[in-house]
Image (cartoon, rainbow, N blue to C red; front, side, top):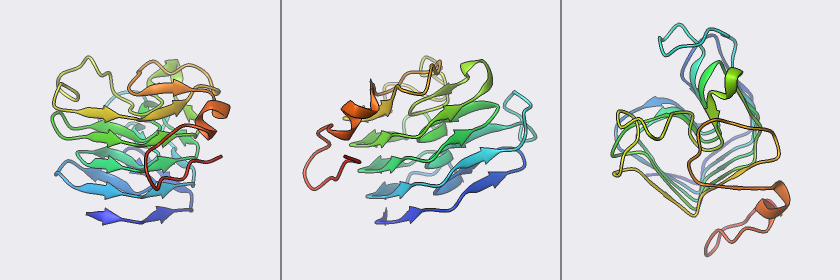
Length: 171
């Protein structure tokens, strides 16, 4: 368990797999009470999932098989494809979010992004019934992203969202 950690610096990757806390990790691990407030950016504008492209960019993790509990991102996340507010890529049957939120702007061409994850949740290769999202929210104020996991809320609603015991929201 990695607990009570944070990143406040900006993270810039030349190509793929950038995150505020974790770049790449498909093994099962647990982040608890962690957050990112720095911007996470890929300099590559090439779409696709090859390592040379600007893919797997996330506020907390570039791609991860972790369980995230009581975690959040408020930094801006920018990449070419598979860009997520919390995790750009996920691992089927492993990646989960409990009491988490993304309040950062997520930007990718053609809306190839998501407020929580940057993958298509209907793709069973990356996401299936073994993945869980519980009491997890993303800000809807910044424009459309194609992939929806969790519940969208305005920033005003997000500031007063009930996140569970001993959890401080941004409000």
